[in-house]
Image (cartoon, rainbow, N blue to C red; front, side):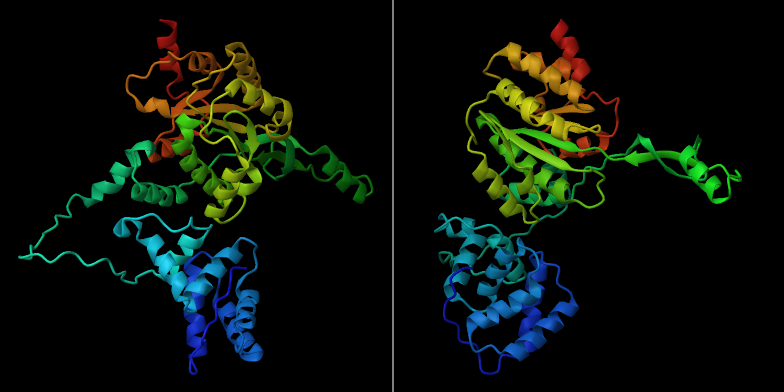
Length: 418
């Protein structure tokens, strides 16, 4: 738990009201807190007392926290709400980096900014006073074009976004889903309208009737959802795209009702790293921070062939079974052996039900597969699509269940043969 500073609680704190407002701040920060928990917290504090800050902290913690990923958010909101002036000043500084014009004193921990935003929602923040001017100028703002700002952001290249635009893009990606249609499996399930005879169930029913066959049980193929496997390039030329796409994969991994059986994610540059378990954390900041700490080759070189060989050897049979869909996110600028790359990408293609390649270089209208790595990999993918903007990821969500979609593959293969 974070360091607890001395805290003077007022003699008449309106306890129930304060705890209710504190619970609302926690709910804004993402904790699933309902009315029942608020009532339990008020009764628990009345029973335990609040003369000691540590006892008060752990009493509320026991009432409001039931997941490990919620502990950090609770700790930050608690310190902000219960009047820690030094910490509140630091949080305000993180909320206004552009106005202060200076870097933060320290890097924010996971969930700190989200806790600050939840608690400071709707609060006016003081900016430094501007130099006095001789004459006050009235500025009129024409808001007629603001409706197109979101459309502009949808089509803006991730690498060209400012810090504020990246934050807004992440909020938009948090609402984006990647649905998939189930496919029919060999196994069946009972259905009165099924076209196949369920022999085993028919015979069991006959045995219960003394061997007399009265009804014929029928079945239909049981629907089955595939796995989603993502291989994300985190080399120097892909680092900005990878960070935002991993944010999107975190949303897909934790989405309810999207249809995927499991979501597996790997990063690669000079080596392969499995970050699947990190993406299962509910808090996106903590998840990506843990993934970045484990992947030690961020913004390094690129050895696609070696990394695909490691994936095919160690992970292919584990995660690509049962009709998995594979997303390969890379620009294809290989510096290794092209023969090894061709061998491994061919094996990867044969192992997956569909192999979709997202390449941010497709943002250029005149893109052609001149690089040797791209020319080697292109014939062995099912679909070749752009992956540089929110609009490109929305297109992916539309076509991922269409087995005949090839994206730009056919056009580029024609250009490659000429």
